[in-house]
Image (cartoon, rainbow, N blue to C red; front, side, top):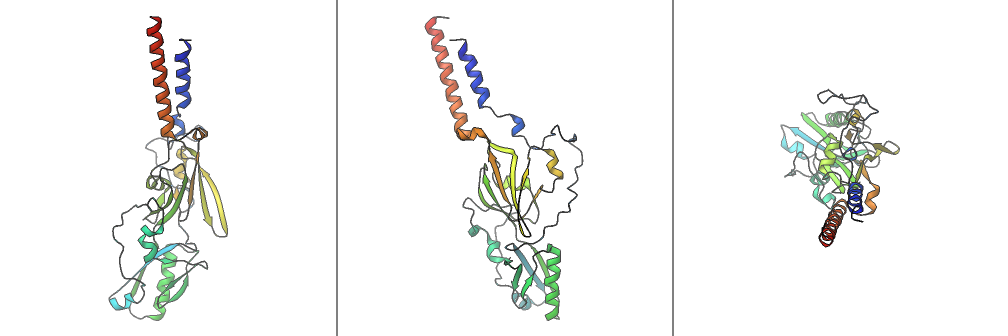
Length: 274
């Protein structure tokens, strides 16, 4: 019996362990071409230019030598304070912590933004640059004074579900963000998240698609899904071991069980005198 206890202990410990291959990012997987650590990895051949969609929020700023003229184009003339380069939507995931939700211009279901004095302008289906040029052209029709326009996406909003340490609606205050920006902004994945099965639910013109990506694979750096897009939903599938409990209580349980086994083995040794 005493000989079986250490063997049983080893089996239980190994069963409770999770292989590094399942949790390590950006590996050189066998099916891919080897990549050296200092090798330059180009972005995907697909040119990353986000196309504006209905329900996106854009920030439009106007500049002119005539301050009264620029005020006429804005619903509010307050500026949002306290924003950093990368920010989260908070634990509740609500829009209440997102100043640009109130300050920006929402694109409606028909793909239009409503600008004071100019009316509704359709910009969905355009890049930021094309949308800026269209708003600029509309202004030039009505005003002889020089009024300059700046238009950009008012942050990238996305949602995390599943095995993330922080789930909910998140915001990154940049106009371009990688999948790793999104992971960092969401508190990373849990230990029990399947990093080879991260699903991206992405909106397209006319519908939605589900894409599966592998965070373990270094080839992700050249993938078109290396960059997230506004309104993406990221779902991390749990490992089967998740049915037993969370990573924290599983580790604690294994440690407690190992301690009890060690104590039992010590008592047996003392009683038998060996």
